[in-house]
Image 1 (cartoon, rainbow, N blue to C red):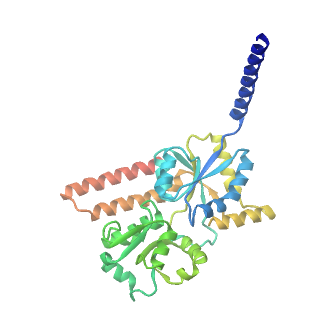
Image 2 (image 1 turned 90 degrees about the vertical axis):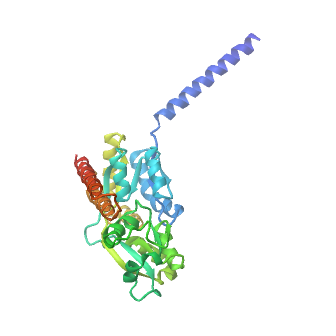
Image 3 (image 1 turned 60 degrees about the vertical axis):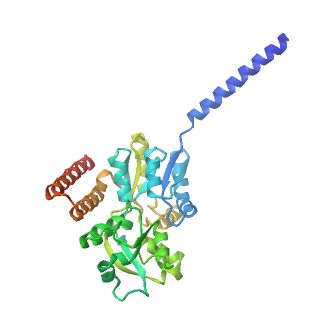
Length: 333
């Protein structure tokens, strides 16, 4: 019995020792980085597009980098709020929300100069519709079925609202016969298949749509386009150590640069990510155009709204001016 007891004690000690070493090894292993992405054509397509870049990033940092896929802006925003995402490519409005809530900071943005075609919001309709579809749309929006993006989508909602609909006293959320809210692929398909009459979209995603759905794209035409949109930004959690932030920025800015087979392969990856010129270093000031758009949207909405008095309207406008000034100051800090 004494021998069995000694063996049992030894076994417990050995298990404890092994457990301690395993725990120490796990503690020493670098934590993974979770990259948040909104699927464009679908979850699988987005993962496949990002896999080569993130695999190289993982090797460069010596730690695993995984993909956190979200199907909606709301879901990705919630993942950021819950700190389930460490790094992400975000459209201007979602990036602005993440920065102003002090959850993330800007590392880089998609490079646009050098002859790259402008990325613009567009409206799509079927070719077999009215002879002057834009005029008919603005004159009788209540007879049109709308397919649009999330309210935080710059090209899917904000730019069409700010530059076309609100100046014509049309609120996208209330004036149309019906609406479908979804991805750019969803909205284009809705019009092509007759489930909606007009869709918000953008030049980049419509180009992708043409390649994936040539028969459906052939039924569509662009009837309006916006001014160029602000570029998308890559953001990182604000509590990520500065040294790691520096490494992330250096990797992104260097990706696809230089010569040789490796750089050529990286440039092909960038093309699939619709960032053919790569990424440029940036900070929170890159979000000033997005803040301006948010300000314009809030101001035009206030001007078009019904108010109990002119004093109430002016008070609201003054609050918008104050909030915008504070936001600009914070982004420039």
